[in-house]
Amino acid sequence: MTRVKAGFVTHRRHHKVLAQTKGHRASRHLLYEKAQESWIKALSYAYAHRRERKGDFRRLWIQRINIAARAQGISYSVLMSLFRRAGVAVNRKMLADLAVRDKAAFDRLLAQARDKAEALAT
Image (cartoon, rainbow, N blue to C red; front, top):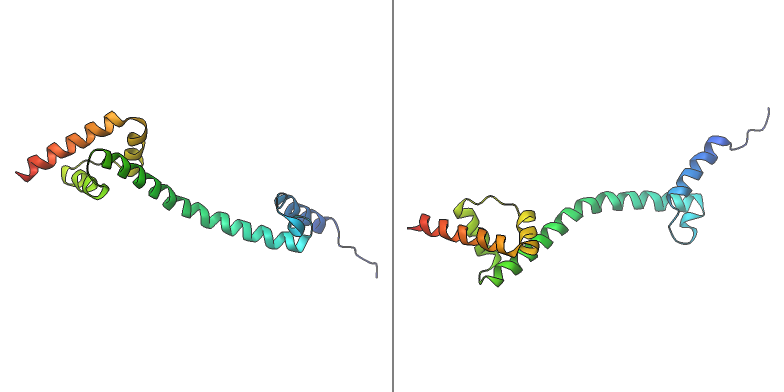
């Protein structure tokens, strides 16, 4: 029986994994087994952190809205309550963008929400 070497397919598969782990440290990009472990771990972290990033951005938007609201003399929770009562349907991403880029528009939106909330209260 002839000897079969670990051939072309195996080398190609190993090369793909080693190419994927190019920036990893030490033997994690040099040795196939270590590289395979590192690569799988990196993929799982990437998957988890794509989902985590959504929460990170939501927290950032809330901070920005809170800063802009406090500049107007109210807290974030009171502001969101005003918007809910007034029926202003602007999401946090857009509010944060207004608060950072166009303070005048944010102030006008707040004034409208206050007026509507006062009209509904009376």
